[in-house]
Amino acid sequence: MAQNDTVKLIGSWSSPFALRARVALHLKSVKYEYLDEPDVLKSKSELLLKSNPIHKKVPVLIHGDVSICESLNIVQYVDEAWTSDPSILPSLPYDRAIARFWSLYVDDKIFASLDAVAGAKDDGERMAAAGKLMECLAILEDVFQKSSKGLGFFGGENIGFLDIACGTILGPVSVIEAFSGVKFLREETTPGLIQWAEKFRAHEAVKPYMPTVEEFVAFAKKKFNVE
Amino acid sequence: MISLYDFYILNEKLKNKLRTEEFDKRKRDECLKLLGFWISPFSRRVEMALKFKGVPYEYLEEDLPKKTPLLLELNPIHKKVPVLVHNDKILSESHVILEYIDLTWSNNPFLPQDPYEKAMARFWAKFVDEQILPLGFMSLVKAETGIEVAIEETRELITYLEKEVTGKYYFGGKTIGFLDMVAGSMIPFCLARAWECMGIDMITHEKFPELNRWINKLNEVEIVRECIPPKEKHIERMNQIVERIKST
Image: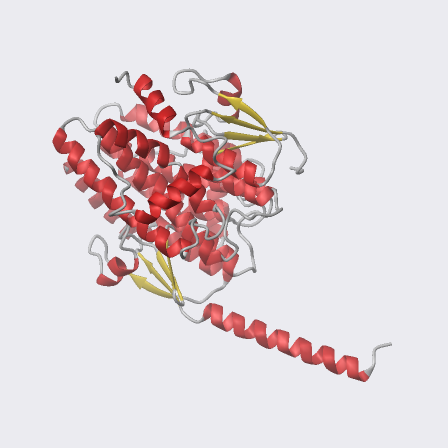
């Protein structure tokens, strides 16, 4: 694909995964048309079904006449197709591997823990799931401390691949915190992540696209019919 | 016209460059160990990648399900094979390891260079491990009634790969690539053995002529052949695994 072929992104306002794609495109200053799926879980557009027939999920990046699915795949594609600065993935092979490893951890383990807390049927299950989520976040705190080297982002001085991958958990975590009254990101256990979350939300490539905590919670309340 | 002095300087620079490259090569190749397991497709594909690059490595066999202290130390998060140790670097997760290998040793690249082709290779690799494997194995083993439905659903997924390989020798084109290593280690040399145990002919010649051709081509590649678990022993072990899953 040529860099100046048309670019479209199919996303959804509330989707943390679509957020990843938007941040990446912003970082690379790519001009694109954003196509919102307002109620993506209930009703999907023709274009979405055509461009992601296997998973039928957002985000989907359409570049010229090809489409790329899956958020982390899209972020890597954006980094590789638009080679101007800033680089999203680290340059050294091992650093890239570490960033990829932990991004897979976020998608496999952390999201599974979030789902387990949200879907718990009784207090016992909820406590066990909450414990598991806390463990995962403690691990992520440790990763943050090693990766950031005191510079503020997982990527160091600048936002990078792992920041974009981890940023997706902030919305779901804030919803679970609001509903349960329990803080999962805390000064005592995850001081680094607390500071990082603030910097991430405020970053110019994130702020325009990331719903606020209040907006997320209002959305979740409506979605799950909770007062 | 180049002077003798210029020639001397160029020669010295070239000798330095070669020395540095040789040193880099030796440094890169210093210590490479792979913790694996003979029937793990995840571990076998890393072996394929290392052999494809012609990189010597030490192989350490884990006798799963028992896990050695070394494995638990090197991969405390997932406690799984494969784990690659390259000098002081420890890597786990097979897709992560494969991409690391391709970047670190630049000869014989096996990931596509084009960003879109690369994105598609990654997409299909994930599809093999996260869609075809669970449906084509656990769902089938656990299905008591309705196994025919599970078989058809698995075939529907496999049809996507049939289309991907149509018109090519391999997924990678004229030579094997990343997706051949992932799909090859998983489908013909792992899942197919499980299907054989269960008496299922999943990838029929009639429905999947291209995949059958691909499997034959794979069998012609020496480094792939070296990474195929021995069939009889594999099927015997698969039978035990299937029985164990059915009884839980």
